[in-house]
Image (cartoon, rainbow, N blue to C red; front, side, top):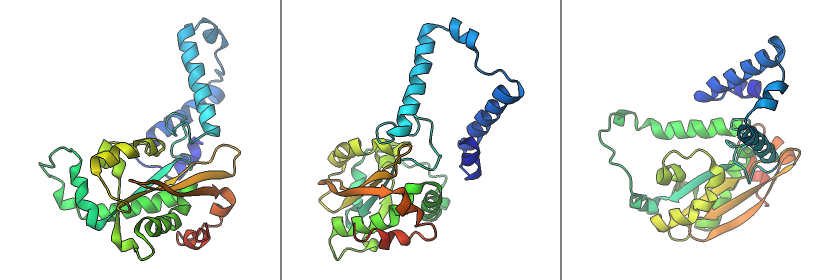
Length: 250
């Protein structure tokens, strides 16, 4: 897994700790031939042993039930399979984002780079489409969400994407926990029906062929949901637009 993550490539600090753990595993179990320290395990404090055993159990459980245990807790982030959430706000309701209590933006030393924000967001979306299997369905589900939330005449140009969990909560890493926060964010923002929706893409459990997806209106809750399959997503391997036609009848 460490080798896979490093060859994706994964960004930022993911390089350092995957490289560290990968080299450590090779050294400890191959070159140094330490293997498992049975004598150390027997003398280890029982509290520490219980904690480590619990973490191993949690990680294994998370591999099979990724919609219950986050990718960080189960140590599988950037492994090509984690929960994704994408938020869209209707342009005429964008002013409601100002209702969130935030820090003052001054001093704005990076203001000259603000025009790069949209381009950076597009690049991130393209990267995630290549990095995580479930993201291949995102384009089709986004277009579905626009029609379901905004009505049959709604168009993509009527909405804009936003990292709403980051906007409301600051640094927000695991999208698995976005769904329980929707009522709290809606209470703060006060969107009307159709003004903001979320596309949620579930993760695939180990040895499982399906994952959940859902489109949620921030005010009204779940609009539509279904299942993604590995076999169907594997066919969307060339262009993001393939998910539009593939999901049109769902």
